[in-house]
Length: 361
Image (tube, rainbow, N blue to C red; front, side, top):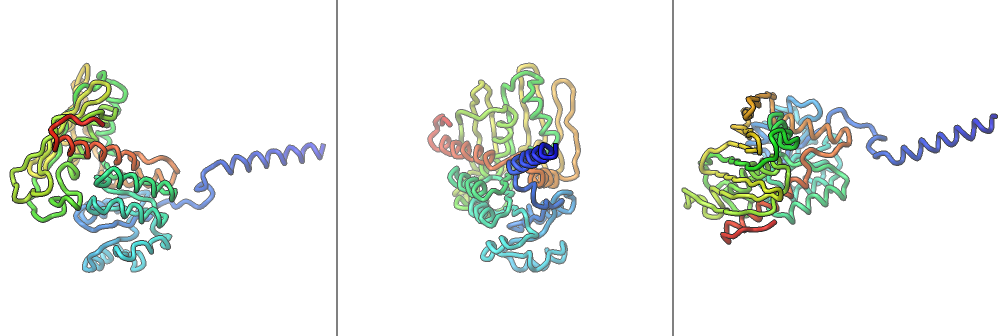
């Protein structure tokens, strides 16, 4: 009897060990309740939106900064209590690998620098949040995805709208065919940018309306229809300020065809304001206006329902969702592959605008 009990205990112990070996390694090391984020690039978005949002987050916090502007360092340190050891520049950035206080690197740089810093952050063993657009080219997106996969770190793209509750409800309506299948999406995103000589007007830095704002209507068309487009049609660029927009597009219109028969009519601009998303379904409609404003998202549907959920900060919700996914070992809501899919279409939009022809994807 004793030997049987011993054998049974041995088998149970062995089974438990085998099961444990099959679980993710992260379950066997202490997991922080809050993850430290280093912001890379301290321009407007980091200064006015991300840093304040990180004072509201529950699952992550502002731990460090990376900047090429020494004059900004004391201001940030005084305001947010960032220690000297968590301050980096673009030359010593790779030393971040040895800093256990920083778990995530959030890349808030011009698009031309996104892929490089995704790769460097991944090689340093840090999880990566990357602002949209993910990169300038499909090849750059693939490079970033590969680096994160090889280094076993997470990669999330900063499409904050997919974390926003009103947008999520619109996505649900399409996915569950509440009004039947989506038939037509009309989406537009733009604002008047009065600057000149900014990186958004420089091709080599990833400027242009299609990259900066065009990914909003493009991404919206994809998540509202729930399919990947098969072709770009009727793409065209225009400008009212040719003396400023000499290298990139100021305004772009384009249409998308989807495999199920749905279409999308999209527009984007750095020369005029536009901020609407409308979806026609087989048996109704729904829309958001504005659909990507920092101040909040509002909308309504043909059955009288209203989209009026309010959250304190879109950026805080996005970062908390992504940090919690890392802590719990879950897939990202908006992974690198999502950014790649958009850039594949962006490249096709430019090709279609140049040729005047329909471009298949």
